[in-house]
Image 1: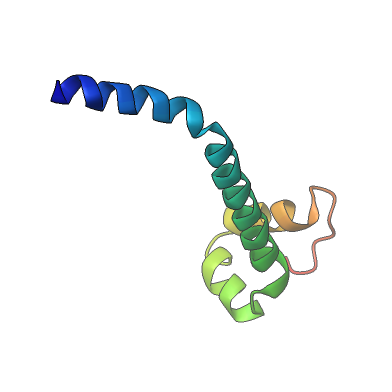
Image 2: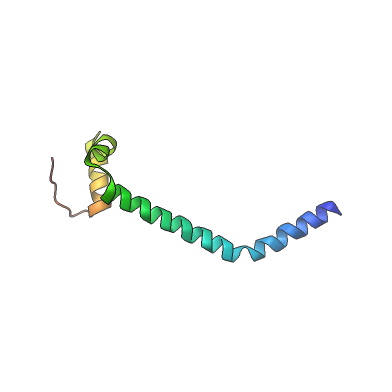
Length: 76
């Protein structure tokens, strides 16, 4: 009986939590958007150089991610 109750609870909970899952997904989407904004707009020059300036590939990826593939190269 215990296992049947647990199975019933799991089954019913899966149907009820779709709105909750959507809210959680929206929260993660918002968090990712804020993180991208921080990486591209709010990080200090020094932190960007330390993180992405260790190789030209990383620097290029950061530039393209934040400013697009057609962004000007300021530093070569």
